[in-house]
Amino acid sequence: MDASVIVVGGGPAGLMLAGELRLAGVDVIVLERLAKPTGQSRGLGFSARTMEVFDQRGLLPAFGDIEVSTLGHFGGIPVDFAMLDGAHYGVKGIAQSRTEAVLEQWAAELGADLRRGHELLTLTDHSDHVEVRVRSEEGPRTLRAEYLVGCDGGRSTVRKAAGFDFPGAAPTREMFLADLRDVDIAPRPIGETVPGGMVMSAPLEDGVHRIVVCERGRPPQRRTEPPDFSEVAAAWKRLSGQDISDATPVWVSAFGDPARQATEYRRGRVLLAGDAAHVHLPAGGQGMNTSIQDAVNLGWKLATVVKGTGSQALLDTYHDERHPVGRRLLTNVQAQGLLFLSGDEMQPLRDVMAELIGYDVVARHLAGMVSGLEIRYDVDEGDHPLLGRRMPPVELLRGTHTTSPAQLLRAGRGVFLDLADGNGTLTAAHRWSDRVDLIKAAAPLPSAGRLAGAASLLVRPDGHVAWTSPGSASTLPRALERWFGPPS
Ligand SMILES: Cc1cc2nc3c(=O)[nH]c(=O)nc-3n(C[C@H](O)[C@H](O)[C@H](O)COP(=O)(O)OP(=O)(O)OC[C@H]3O[C@@H](n4cnc5c(N)ncnc54)[C@H](O)[C@@H]3O)c2cc1C
Image (tube, rainbow, N blue to C red; front, side, top):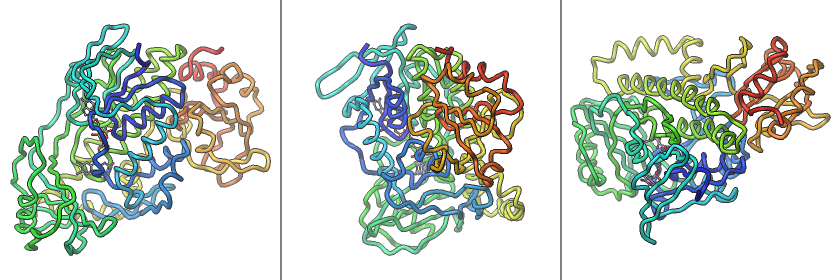
């Protein structure tokens, strides 16, 4: 074997996955077609849950000063995300290229073998290993690994070569995005419809403006090259009346509104994560976030299996947990697209939605959905409100020292948190101490409330709660074995 795992694609999903695998001590090769990063940024900022995930791995300082905005939208209708405890609409102004650079450096420091200028051409799943053919400057190569993960984006070669089904809706329209210099464009928030479509503009860093043009009735096109800026400028003029043809384009791109999802996230030894598993209209800034969180769900499970302690059933929980998240993402994105891309005929529904969003319970529901904070996996351990959810970012005390769940998760291991149990559960968990950190801590008052009375909790490496007491102490060994393998 050339590595235990080959990851195809060095975008946000592939780099996050490589870091997670290395954190668990698994050797990984990342094959990336591009010789160097493009510096282009489809996504801007990241969501509340991604911020927590980065905090869990100690990555936030690498982003410098981080500013979050609680004011967001659903389909162009303003929503105050502060409605939901800990939620915000996103980190402001961090270009996707910067997020990728941070992840690349982290994965490299942990020892991931990132091979740029290496394009996967074909693959064969030989039931006990996977073989891939790769094109690189040094000529064609064959590589072998125990598992292969396709993080190679919406047009995934891995997905096609491994025969994954990718049903759903084809794009119905084409839209443009351009980052421009040497032009003065007034900010226009998303959702501001104009006769003939929707235009959006926002200032980025260093005097660059981003514009998005969605012209109704513009059919999707099969492009192999980005559109010419003149096409974008003409569409902008038709919709906004402003002539921007003299601007200097930094980056021009076209995108559509497909809604497709792989029916399985795993076929034998081949798995998919990120856009390779789901493509959709970029509404509400969710694609990169979902991709990163796919990787964080998969990384520790695949590592546990590769290291021989985890079962195939554990690996299958990746599909079981992330496929529903992807399906829900497609639904909310399609709903948002209908709201902000349709014409006047949608106005009554927009008005009703705006009225509904005025109710706290609705705003909270939408904020939870878009921020990724409401995700609840089925961990099958009872009905404690935290089960399956992400561990809330509470303050904990270890003696006189203050800590947090994010700090306790830095090593990417499981955490057994004994807050006040006294039931001997900590002793029971000892047999997994080679894979799970056993922590005695106290939750001061506001934290205790947010933990809904839990006396001890088992937190998975991805930050989701897998077991709580009181209520089900006798089931702790079963939960530990399910997520971390048999006791040592
Ligand atoms: C206009 C637009 C705006 C967006 N805005 C946001 C936003 O604000 N927030 C957000 O969260 N998301 C946003 N997204 C979505 C986000 O950009 C994607 O969801 C995200 O990039 C997916 O990450 P990924 O790693 O799965 O795939 P990608 O980023 O597509 O990375 C795939 C990588 O695989 C490589 N690759 C492909 N084929 C091969 C091969 N055969 N061999 C080797 N390497 C290969 C590619 O070169 C690429 O580096 C936006 C998307 C668009 C189009």
